Image (cartoon, rainbow, N blue to C red):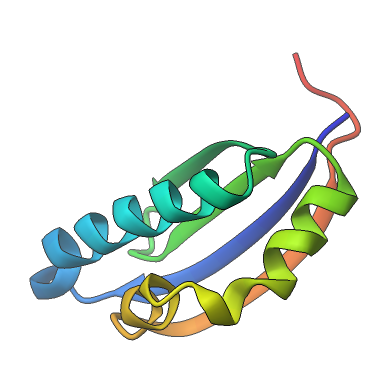
Length: 96
């Protein structure tokens, strides 16, 4: 099964369009250097927060990308538009 990195944060409504553009650029850059990223899902929850879950082929691919995070200029630019950000890693145990 795949592994995930799940983020939860807030984005001001006035920043959402810019955030989505920056997130898209960040995902493209990560995929270019780290093909183990299989998909990323952004969900707006009813309380106004977002969950952003990135699915990876393996722990190794995830951790290699995380180690390279300082080389992605899009990362701090994207996250600068968020508030109250948290992140957790996990393993998919059942997917239907």
